[in-house]
Image (cartoon, rainbow, N blue to C red; front, side, top):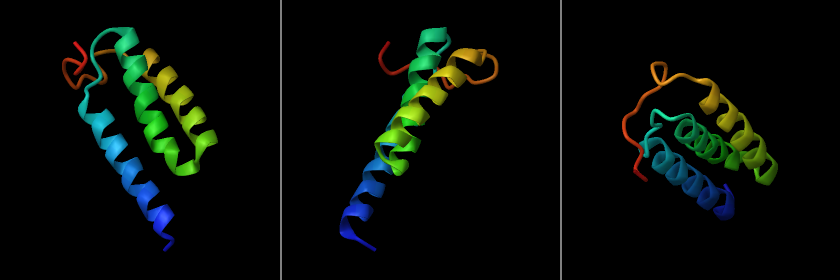
Length: 78
């Protein structure tokens, strides 16, 4: 395995863990923001295009979900 690929995977896993631990919140904007972060974190494996697509899909999914469906608590930024 290439050392650069290994480092990128470590960064991707760390970013994804940080985003997942930040919580989703109850407001539409909070869920959209955390969804975008989660999607971009997962998309980093696919490079810059994957980050853009993952962020967009995550934001839409976060904004369309209801707090009763996904509620991980108060967001870290509040």
